[in-house]
Length: 214
Figure 1 (cartoon, rainbow, N blue to C red):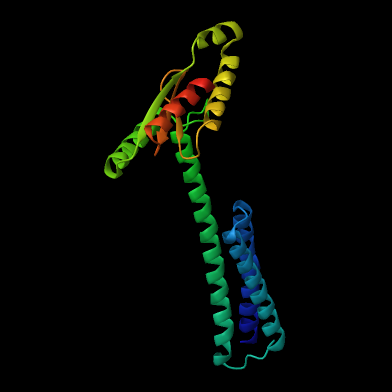
Figure 2 (cartoon, rainbow, N blue to C red):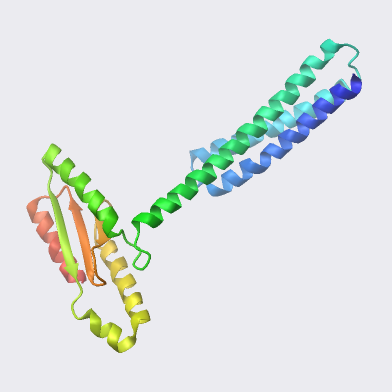
């Protein structure tokens, strides 16, 4: 009986140490926010419980002389299993969410230009048109085209042309507000810029700025 009690306490303490590994992985993936601080606080609590397990094992080592003496070691062991399971599930869930976010980003982003693609543009236009109609908001869509871009490909090659497209996309993105969106509409030279919640004059100015950028 003493052997069982000692095993439960020591193995429970070891499980608490194991649970710190997925928490550490999770913390490294999180930005420096309150959520990361909360997980750090949880790590400190687990370390404190680990010390408590060791102190209990030292004070009551080989003192289990009845079945009732196993109640506390069993509770300690069960609690450690619960902590390990929860921490591993949290880390696995975070990994799955991150993977889904990456997959979604890949499905809505043009890989060459790094801006949103035509599929995502169609979805956003439907949503924003419904929102603009419901709340009587302004919504403008600008179609921008790079003139004579074929000369770049013919003169310098497609690799340089791809670099030019990527640079132009970044420049256009830098010239719009945070909540405006830039899409690749169709061909290599077509960009679509979606301006939201602006007056007519603001939309006109946005169009002038877009033309100046291109």
